[in-house]
Length: 179
Image 1 (cartoon, rainbow, N blue to C red):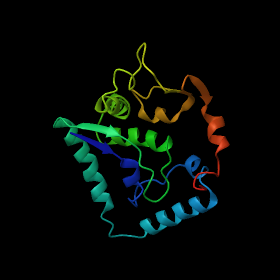
Image 2: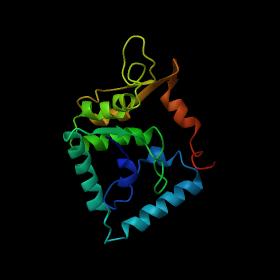
Image 3: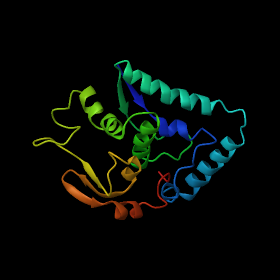
C-alpha cells in the first residue's frame, strides 16, 4: 500500500506555520501573490481552526504508516491556497518529512526512490547508478546531515543538460499564476 504525502499543501492552512519564503512569493504574478496573501491573512484570523491538529496528526500518521510497512511517496500537489510551486514545494516536502520524524536520508529516499519503486521503474530511475536515467540537482552543503541545505540548489541537470538554478528562477519571476 502506498500513500502520497503532500504536507506543504496542508501546512499553508495552519495559521502558526510560516508563509512560503519571499523567493517563492516573488515568482507569483501580482494577482496570484495578492490572493495567496489574502488567504493566509484569512487563515491567521481563524482562531478555531482545526488545521493545526490535523496537520500534526497527518505528520504522525505518515511516520506510523511507514513503521507499519507502508510505502510513503512524495508528490507535490500545487493546490490549496496558491503558494505551492513545483520545485520549491518538493524541497519543502522533504524538510517537512524530516520534521515528521524521518531522517534526512529517509526523507530524500521517500522523495526519489520510493516513487520509482512503486511504479516499477527503479531499474531505470529513482537513484544514481551507472546506466540509469537521472535528473539531479547539486546543492551547496550536505542535506543528509542538515536538511535545510536542500534549499541551496546551485545546478539542476535535466535530460543531461545543466541549468543554472538562479537564472531559471529569475526568468520566471512574476509569471507563476498568469496561465
